[in-house]
Image 1 (cartoon, rainbow, N blue to C red):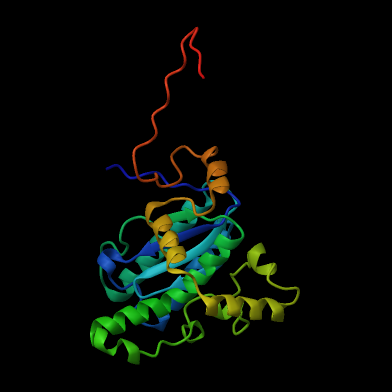
Image 2: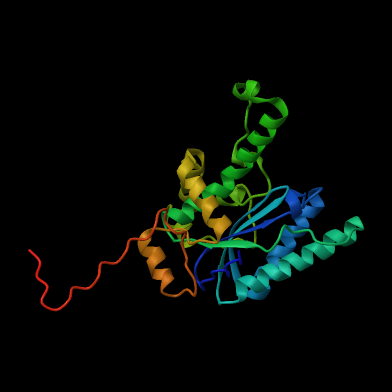
Length: 255
């Protein structure tokens, strides 16, 4: 099946995902993480893309970005991918691909869904840690697992949004500013939202959207963006489409 072209909308937030080839590691030590930070900053400034949030996992890079023009997001991700591969291959004396295919993206509706995506990124390290521990220790030890809080994971924007660190390349989305009238109020409210977490259904919807390149939002938002898109923007609902009724012929009467 031919892959669908990406849906990019200027001045709209997007969830963007890069993965390692065959699930391989993208980072081996602190220097690699920090170099990725530098490249994100450089490329976002160069291509005029706002960075709202980030998460660097061992084999994944998640970003929430707002491009200011139609092609700025693609240019940023192409520059980011090339720059990091060049650095990584030079440092480790290797060659060839590093990424598991092209980057994935999903446009996000402002409001609840934007905040849910921010929360998703901050909670994901704990989910991944839990899954890894369970694979190593088995289901029998599940009750004994003590999963750390998002604040213990360094490589995400959670520390920035809770006031523990200042990331110079982060631009808070308007939905974050709406959480409170002061920095302290916003940080406290954001921390509460992350502690509350997401429902399984919300997490699955975010994952399905990024996997398929679909729009993440309500029906009205999806219908609005569909008018601007060159392809279908949401996954088709299960079942056959309803058949249209034949038009009535002249002289036909209905009771």
